[in-house]
Length: 615
Ligand code: ADP
Ligand code: ZN
Image (cartoon, rainbow, N blue to C red):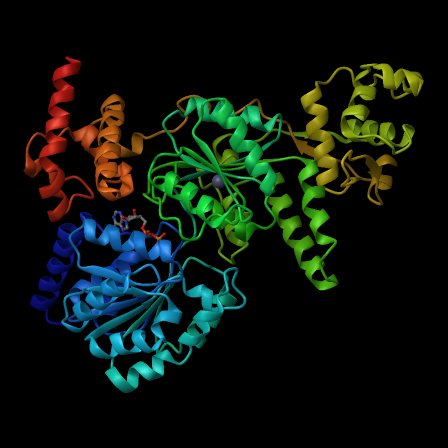
C-alpha cells in the first residue's frame, strides 16, 4: 500500500471500530490480525478468553465484500453473538435447528442476495445439503472457525463434527479461489495449536498468539476455613457483583446454591445432571442478570457469553490447571477487574483421587500428575502467574502484581516441629481417626470419645495447645496435600502415615509452610476500580448502580442480556464523565452509531435526573 492508502486504510479501520462496535482502540493483536485477514491471508489466532477474538473476524466481515461464514459449535453461542451484532446494527443471522422452516428460507434468501455480513452455522449444518447450497449461492468472503480447538482430539472439547472441516479448505479453494480462513481458539497448548493448523489445512497462515496473562484478574488461593462462610462473606462485601462458583460435585453445586438462597442471594445450580430445560433456564437467568451467582460443575462454561462476570470462585480444588485457567478466564472478559479465588482443603485431594480408581493406569498417571500441578500451584509462594502460564509453556518473569503473593509477600514458617507432633499424634492414636480428632488430641481438647479411648493419657495430648485450630487444620491439610500423610476417601476420612512420613518424623527433612493469612486482606471494598477513572474523573458508584438498574430494565424490555445494551465498562465511564450531550455520550467506549441513536437520550436523561435528585 502507498502511504496515502495506508492512511486511508487506518482511518477506515478506526472508524469502523468506533462506528460499528463502539470501541476506541484495538486490543493487542486485533489490528494485525484484521489487516492480515482483510488482505486475504489465512490466520490462526490464539488469544485468551476475553482477548477479543470475535472482532478479529467481525471487522473483516464488514470490510470485505460479501458474506462471512462463521462456524461455531454451540447454538447458544451463535444466538448470543448474532443478537450482539444486531444490537450494533450489523446484519447477521444464524442457521441452526432452532429456526423455523420459514426463517431458514428467509435467511437463505438473504444470504443469496448478499444482505448478510455474517452467517453463523454449526459444522454439521455446513455440510448438510441445504448448508452447502446456501454457501454455494452466497458471495463467500471469509470463513471463520470459532472455538477451533474443537477439531483436535488433544483438546478438552473435541467435537467429531469439527473433523468434517478437514478438507473444507480445499473444497472452498475449488469453488471460490482465494477465500481466507481464520481459526480462533483460547486453548494454548502447542500440540492443539499445531493440530488445528494441520487439520484445517491453513495455507501459510499468519500465526498470532497473545500472552495468556490476564492482567485484570486477581488470583488468590486460600485454605478452606468453613468455605461457605468465606464465600458468603465475600458476596456480602461485593453486593453488586455477579459471578460463578465452581464446585467439585453435582450435589455440591445444589447444596451451595440452596444455602446461598437461604441467605437471600439469587443463586442457581448448573450441572449435567439437571434436565436440559432447567440447565438452559439457569444459564439464561444468569446471563440475563436475573441470577446473581451460578453454582456449577465444570459442565458450565463454553458457550456462556457474559463479559461482566466479576468473580470466579472454586469452592473445591480443581482437577487440572488447564481447566482452572479456562474457568477463571470467564471472569472479567470486559477488561474490568475481577477476582479469581480458589479454596482448597486436604479432603479435596481425596475426593478427586477417588475418581481415579476407575481409570486405566496411564490415564491415572496423567490425572495424578495434573493434580500434583494444581497442588503445587495452590502452595506456590511466589507469583502465581509463573506456574499458571508455565503450564501452557509461556514464560512469565514473576511479580505480576495481580496475585495474592505479589500483593502481600507470604510469610514462610518452619513447621517441622509441629509437623512431627502431628504425625506422632496420628501414629499414637493408631492411624484410625480423622483430622478433627487428631487436632483435638494435640490441642488437649478432651471429649467423651478421647476419654473413652484414653487418648488424654498420651504424651502427645495437649502438646499443641499453644496454636489455634485454624493453624493445625492448615498444617494437617498441607501435610496431606504434599503427601506427608494420607487421608482416606470414605465417608469418615481417617489419617494415616505414608512413606514420606518417616524421614520427617526422624528429622531428616524439614517442613515449611505459608503462615495462614488472616482472612482476605481484600475484604470490603476490595476491588480497586481506580483504573477506570476516566480523565481523572472518579466513578460515581451510586450513579453506576442507578445506570445498571436502567440497563437491566432496557434489556428486559427487549429480551436481551444487559451486556448487549452496554457493558459495565461503558456504564462506569458514563458514571465518571456524566455526559450531558450526545457528542459527549459518543465518546464513551462501547457507544457506536446504533447505540448512540437508540439509547443516547435515555441515558443522558437518566444521568441528568440523577444529578438533580442527589443535589
Ligand atoms: P473472546 O471471544 O476472546 O473471549 P470476545 O470477542 O467475546 O472475546 O470479547 C470480549 C469482550 O471484550 C467483549 O465484551 C467485547 O465487546 C470486548 N472487546 C473486544 N474488543 C475490544 C476492544 N478493542 N476494545 C474494547 N472492548 C473490546
Ligand atoms: Zn503475581
